[in-house]
Length: 265
Image 1 (cartoon, rainbow, N blue to C red):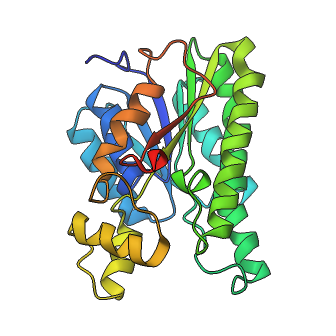
Image 2: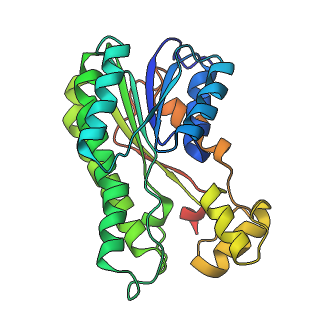
């Protein structure tokens, strides 16, 4: 399906790995000009090369720490300079957050989880808004998590941060409706990300096997889905790509689960 993204300008925050890179790839496949933001220059270089090979003209990476407001402002100043002050697409896919029981999590872990998972998104949207408003059409997608609907006692800080992301996104959809800027949320379930695979390997489970990975998730976090396996990053990207595309012309304020059916249990 042609998503109408040819020559569109898109920023994917945290776009060098996992679900983030999968989303950037979908945008590149449709011909969008993609900028990815991350902290690792080497990972950014590898991802940009991949996006260019997939057909993204002018793909580039920006090394930045979204926990720093000045750094974020510089990111979008560079984006604006390259793309004549306009931006069509912003995707925020950051903030893994701390895992642990309520009793064990420290104040600093709570602060870091909220800073990474919420304030990073807030800073990016705030800095991107002038560029989005100037564009002929614009979309925002923020990533939340299915755990906001199906709780785990081992993820109280992470889940709380993602719930704030969902709430702020809903508020933004109301604020920006008059500008016809659509704001939606994608809530992935248990996805075979690098961090989750690494965790599984550390507890003696082959994290690269999505069936064994789901068994470990069920045992340790209580997050079973109707599907017997964990999801894959490439199963998230197309959903986010549709939401930020011109094919989506009326859906806003929605929270889309991509979670193997866990919300039905």
